[in-house]
Length: 217
Length: 217
Image (cartoon, rainbow over all chains, first blue to last red; front, side, top):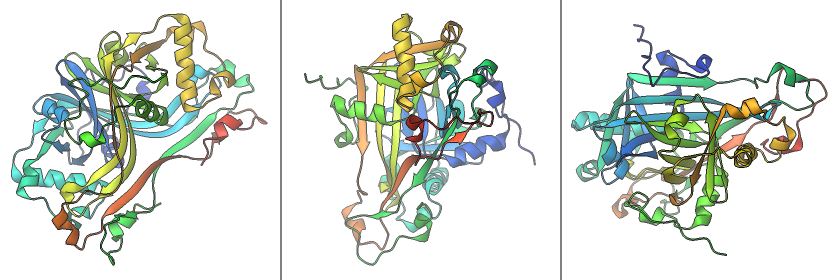
């Protein structure tokens, strides 16, 4: 049961730093499953628009959700979009400013965003988006009402045209620069979670559930 | 010397959660100065394309740099772009899944990306991008050669059409949901820096400079 490799199209083929490309599907899954938010790119009135938003992967589909009133979601439905997920892993200090870089894992997905209208698929998508951030939270909190569901736009994007780019490791200085008295290396960057802060209106006696506490650093 | 407020245009006016909008320029500066990377949206062959990239603000201009070989940078030069900067501050747990949210600070800037060709402005822009991540680093490392400069595309985007959106605080549940036995609150999210890791090829005796060590958490 090996999944097909990612297709290479003119817009996913890496022109630069091809060694940073990862054509296998598992690398794509790993990036998508690790990040908290994505950036959704749409074309609205001929111009690009980039919106940070929540998402989740289910198999070979990425689901996004937003308000039906959101201009970017309206511009995305049934149209070409680009979803980019970026995890910043480090600042890379080189001996020359030109060779400075960042360590990162990123995925770009291109395709037509399909509005999800089928109720079971909508429900599964919303569940996946909630569970992506906090497994266990969907069944813990109150489920959406019909009215709440109607106010939510759900979009699906297939993982058919995508690229993954990863940079890791130290700086790549020019050989002649190694003789310089300049420090070179990496400062790691990471996202961390703090201790849960209870809502001021929380009823007494309700503790932080284990599936939420798991985030705490 | 008060700066003008941010203009409100059809694409920067907030239709939803207008209370999260911040029309003052200082709020825009604060978001742009706090983040490490932005997401650049362009239209290439009629479709959107979203690229994570480095940037810096100088006064009322945002500068981006990339390789002259980069397809997104080629598509951006002289064309309408959208630069979005997002700082994720927390996961907001509500009593209902519908009221779940995230705390964040984000800025969206629209406009035509001007290719920067004037050598002093190019140099100042590259310096600002390096210094944005690590003040002091530009003059510490080797300056770019003419050849390195020629391989770098620098774009400028004026801060004339922009919006800032900030969400902070606890969940906004429906009043009737407050009676539920469900924990509600916020799990803070933050970006942290790890201890500097020296390049394996670093010559002995070169310590981490103070302006880099300042990142260490």
